[in-house]
Length: 330
Ligand SMILES: N[C@@H](CCC[C@H](N)C(=O)O)C(=O)O
Image (cartoon, rainbow, N blue to C red):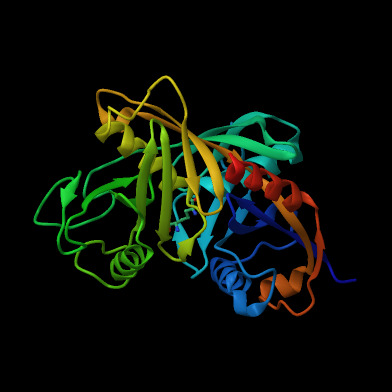
């Protein structure tokens, strides 16, 4: 009998992922098999639920105090150190698997605290996740610009004239620019240039443009490394909220969460600034929605054969769309 395996299709603010729990497999996939599977599954041309932005791999953790490990494989097969929207969905998955509401998850660089939050809306489950560590140091991004050790609110005409840029790792790399109105052509141009071989960000960078809408209210749009335009980037919105709090104290109220709108919905961030900016604390709170269950044979997973996948809907997306409608009406 062929051994069957499951995948889950999930999203956080419509940042779309497949989750694969490797602990349930008879034989784990090799790194190259995971890369090929991510490239195949995420490509919308392969017609599996319109593809996705990445594959989230759940493994056993090597640490006793973590419920599991999350690895993040981007749509192009590259591995990222972190994924904020993805971590919320993996947290929900582990929470339901182990029946716990508050725990730690091992990620590429560190173990992060996560906890179940109040539902974001009727039947829209939500999780709060810690985003850490923070660094502005050029070697941690990494970036290279005129020998500068940090890039904070810097005019960089080589990227775009008349805009300023801040580079921060959380710990995946982000470049943030505050604008009056997001120009998608500009965002796409900078995102593409800095994620092709270039003199400034040798490992690429996630680029976010942010409109300040009001006190503690932002709109953020991101061009992601290894993906392209996404509906939302959790670490991008977290990094942007931190930079917003550091640079815009007239619009930042430290006693309240920040509401961050994005093309896929909305999240909340909580920023506790510290005198040493790297010691600041960031939390990202938002939906963790499971839209589909997929059944596939374990051997097809190993060979990235998508021809015989059985898909069923969970029904959760209807509730998420009600939530989005409620934001748009507000
Ligand atoms: N969408 C993610 C970030 C995923 C990784 C990113 N593309 C990178 O390469 O750093 C998020 O929600 O944080």
